[in-house]
Length: 356
Ligand code: UT7
Image (cartoon, rainbow, N blue to C red; front, side, top):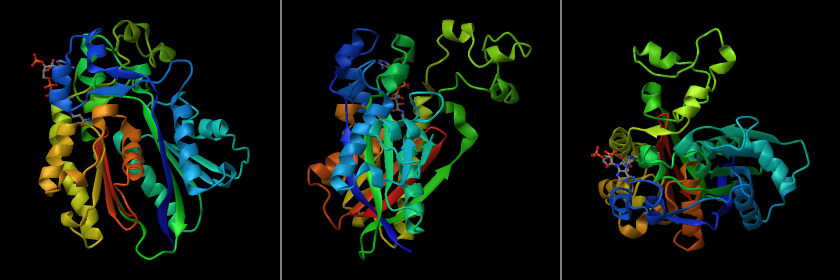
């Protein structure tokens, strides 16, 4: 069996910078609140009608391919991680194939919906395909265009101030070099609290999960006779029930426990310990979460890459953007032990250890 390595990496963020003060003009929030609670100073928003999740993903993918010196038509599998796809279906994987101008059809395209842990899940999938020898050039993209689906009224402020747009991509290839490549990946899920961080409409649930839990929930749909209208109803539109919602403190408390746990699990598997990590690239959910994890792992500031200050939380794109920046800045060098870790909606969480 081969080992898989990241042969090329790239990221793309839109030009449009949105500061906390800009948001304070449209909702009741403040620069002070957002900085203090999250560390975020600004985020990027894609240009409406000109950019989409797919086009941003394609720009990042082109950079990853160029760095690896691989032609787009040599890609044999695409994995696209996003929670903000261009269409409900088909997924962004095939749209990326088209956007990149890959005309051959001897290629697979897979979309994954694992939100904040999407990139780590995608890397694990790419790793398995490469290790078994099935594919040689797996293109993994994490991209989000949150700005199109956020509630910009004060009602949505706890979620809206956090998220930003952007994309990151890697090309995963086999390597026969000793001591290089993906050492291990660890994946977890627990659906018990699926609705604690969720974007539930439009959807096929028709109130099911809430009824099962004995909860009242006002969907406003007219009843089971009008099936076609259960997916998205005028009532949902009138009441803004098509935005993401999050019980922030609940998610925060679990995240600070799960990050160290899943990092330790990967290190144990590889016979390594916290002190062996050269660079931790955590999912950029909240600077306070990253700082908590850093403290628990006893890492120095130069061993943790944070860029949430500039981009906010870009969900599936956050790890590849951060890793791409760290590589570009020379903060990750050949032979370094890089640790990726993520926790988010689902809940799903995971980690990856890479010998760079
Ligand atoms: O990447 C996916 C995983 N997601 C996460 O890991 C997110 C984890 N959670 C968090 O990062 C934090 O919980 C948040 C940053 C989302 C929220 O911070 P918090 O300290 O947990 O605030 P809170 O939700 O408990 O709200 C505290 C107060 C509330 O007011 P009252 O009830 O105390 O009067 C909120 O209404 O802050 C208010 N608030 C805001 N005020 C100004 C909530 N959002 C805002 C806002 N601006 N944007």
